[in-house]
Every structure is written in structure tokens, then in C-alpha cells.
Image (cartoon, rainbow, N blue to C red; front, top):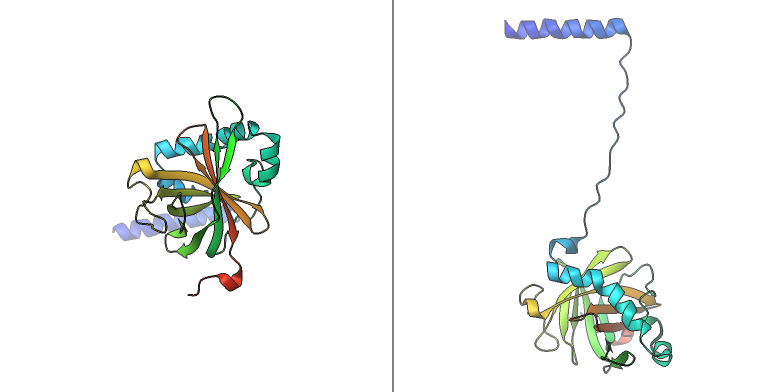
Amino acid sequence: MFRRIVTLALCSVLAACAAKGPPQVVLVSTVAVEEPPAWRSSITPDSEAKLEGLRANWAGLHSRLSPRVRTAQGKLVDPAAGLDQPTLTPGSYHCRVVRLRTPARGPATARSSSNDFCFVSSTDEGVAFVKQTGSDPAAGYFYPDGKRYVFLGARQRRAGENSLGYGNEPARDMVGVVERVGGFRWRLAVAGADARQLDIYELTPVPADQQPRG
């Protein structure tokens, strides 16, 4: 009995629709929902605060560099010098670290380390980075974010290691941004402990014939 009633009711509805003319076309609009960058699901509140303040702190340090230092370091230390297409190809890179520091008085300083080696690789987790030689050992991942990457990593105990991951020991956590600043030239700017410190890793590819095999 139930099925019959439903059928009759449906026939009545169809008949009424036919009497009123052709059915109206209903347009359904779709809205694309933008996914948040992957790094947002991993970053800690402390690191996020450093990342948000990095650009302003960097601008303050840059403004206090002497004209001679700004000329010598050029785009590498200029916070406004980032370019489009920041993608790094996997492989070995020359890297040196420029440490920007602001003393209690006087201009900011820029001290450079020796030219060491870093390595960039493509993994299941993302673009991996490790500093292989020298001081300032670091390792972590680069996360795409528009015209830059966001770096989440950790200061390692020894150069070439990547055993300490971001978030394992909060005191060793590192956060920064990666940008292209020229042809085959990138920089990784890492936020310091406070607004008076910033480390900039300059990355330039090792020539193809000197790249490690495998």
C-alpha cells in the first residue's frame, strides 16, 4: 500500500510539473576553498610569533647597517629583495652564514662564516635541508608558501646530522624564510632569539660536475 501511495503522489507531482511548463534550470556555483600552507599544522606558537615578526626585525637590522656593509652584502641582506620562483633544485650547495647583530650602541654588524656545504633533497615529507659542514649546523624542511618557502628545522649537535627534528627540543627549534635573490642564488633567513639577531644562509649551487653522485 505504501509503495502505491508514493507512486501516485509522484505521478501527481510530475503531472503538475508538466502542466506548468518546462522545468527551470538551477545554477549551482562552487567556491574553491584554499588549503592553508602545510607548515601551519606543525609550527608552534613561539615560532609563529618569530616568523610574523621576522620581516620587521630584519628591516630594523638592515636600516642600522652602515652604507659600506649594505653595499658589500647587497641583495643578500636586503629584506625587500626576494624574487618570484623560489624553487631550489635538489643537490649540493655552497653556503655561508651572515650573522646580523645589533649592539647596544652603534651600527648593526654583519659577520660572515666560511664557505661551507649544504644539501637540498626531495623526500616524501617535503624539501629537506641539511648543513653538512662548518658551524651553525642545521636541518629541517622547506614548505612552499607563495613566493617563498617557510623553514622549520632544528640546530643539530654536529654538522651533517639531521637527527633532531623540529619540535623535539624547543630550545633548538629554528624558523625562517627561503627566497630567491638572483640567478642561482637563494637565501635562508633564520629568526634569532630576539629582534636584534638574524642569521642569513646564502645558498649557491655547486657546479654540476662537482655534485655528489647517486
